[in-house]
Image (cartoon, rainbow, N blue to C red; front, side):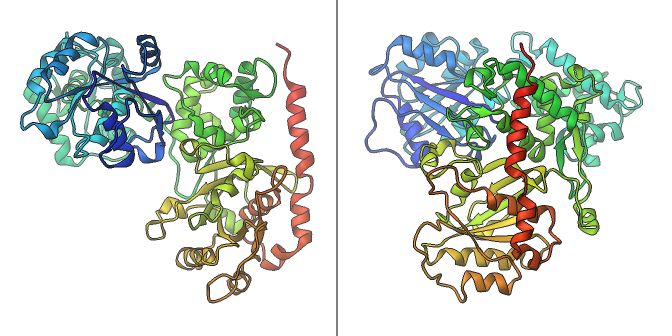
Length: 595
């Protein structure tokens, strides 16, 4: 999820809230603790729920009540910290804070008993409290779990699902689950038989239930509800009872997974196929952009982005998006960048894209049967290779290279950012993807660059799945090329995926690589194009020629190496690129309807 999560730690003095934050960041107990920790953002890549998490500390010594209320108004979840060895801090929890979500008992290393007996009455009194966790900043006990529960309180909250006073699910939750039950009831007999339960299970969780697990589920329902099972199938009452049980046992994520499932837009993607937006979806998204681009500058300001996503239950785009796609001089997402981000989401997570289209009302506004009608599933890549042509519009390039070889600079240069502009990017807002358009033979194509983490021993299938491989080495580091050579030999030497070697930082003096042969000899030996010199240390925007070459190779993996070395081939491939880019942008400006 690309929702920004404000986790505000509130507490009385000396209970260790600041130590908790510092222990999370440094993974060790701090010797010196300030009154208040600096605001930090934890990137999505390192969190269990894949959500960027913004943590804000509060100090009574440095801040006013007004500042506290401002932070509370922005927070998605509030963590109230007390000390398990201080009864007064526990008592203060019960009468000062009225709308917390997570209670945090710190300093558990100082006592041998639990504070849960004291806390449970408070939790029962305030329905807003999601959970309580005891931890120790000193021993690093439950530090990660604390922030996991904070995320869970936002992504899988109890409030919309369950009423503690009535000990039953809320009416809107029952209504949504009832609809899912009816969709799963394929023969419309009011009972989910084993086949229908497995259909439901596969749709929500991507795997069927084992026969014994099915019987165990029905057995639990039978013991608690006389009419929960009928004719060896699950009734609606039994189905709803199960979800009530999940929630009561703290397994809210199970019910949320069902509610967020693909029942409303199920789309099966065969292996070796990709997903792209079709013409109708792009037209719809263009109209959405037009509607919210109120100042007609062909870019979305932060306020316009917020207005566009106001119909969503959460903000889907985090600050990393601005470093994934093209932006204007103010750092605002341009029209091209906006469409690129939608293209990226469709390619990487089509179910998420369908969900987003649903929130925007695609099927209603575009008068389509479902969001799935806006998606094109490309044909199997093997067929493209056999026919030596492709109808795809999006091509993925995985970028490999050792640490500090220039991979991140290569991604950002694709978006028009030189080295000076890249230095302005905050580390916590860094993106491992970049996507934009290129033009090959006058045709607009999307090139998706993905920076692969340089862990040679743990490359996953996702790291290896792409249309072209980019191997980046630093010409000024004599040991940089060796990593590229090892990756190529172990993973790509015998594959049909085309590879290109990038000699990065070419503005620096080239140093002989400490390898058995030169990069040029290595490329000749393995029938690759010669290393391509590249630098992003330029006065203006870096050259885009290399990206046209990559897209062309991805589109035509069958092209011979002789052609790849031919300047005429590359000239033909890039003809009209600048003209088409300018015309496309100008055409959009002309077609904007006056408001």
